[in-house]
Image 1 (cartoon, rainbow, N blue to C red):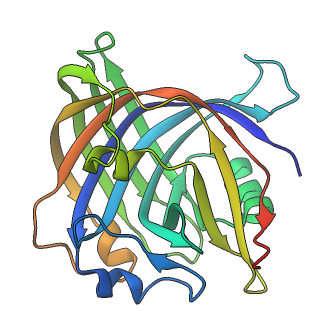
Image 2 (cartoon, helix red, strand yellow):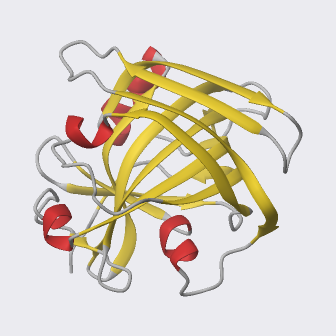
Length: 235
């Protein structure tokens, strides 16, 4: 398998604090829930991939892939990363490839994303409805955009904890721990104006809807390189 290059665009980081025990109970045994000031977090992240392609393919020849994920924050042997409970994407080929080669829980979905306005004042309308055969139906619909001035997350801040993650972990078909490294510049971030119209991702993944309100951040995006899926070699 090969490295993948792509652009991540028009991202909403919608983040809810949870009891670490509620999240930890849903993680593979190889992972430990990561916390910030005592809270675990669930994040819903809608966005679109652009120019998705093998790293050896020239820019401009890749494919678009709108996506929605539900993720949390973990460590493995002290190394931080993210763990995905589900990923919905609007592309049968991309979903099939990610399931087969990256061992990620992708589901096929109908996703509509519309962007109006220029950078720093755009309005994004995002609607995802899962259509994957045999999978539980779920929908996420929201309107969002940036608010205020662009900033970069300070080290050790909540914004950094929730966004500056450069590895994901997954469980392979035979129970092996797998991971991939992610390389990109630090996120350009904004506070976000958000209206969530519908969100059934929590119930579809076995969680009660969090009682505490969310924290929102927006990013216009970064260009990204993801390594191939690797097997974690425990010492």
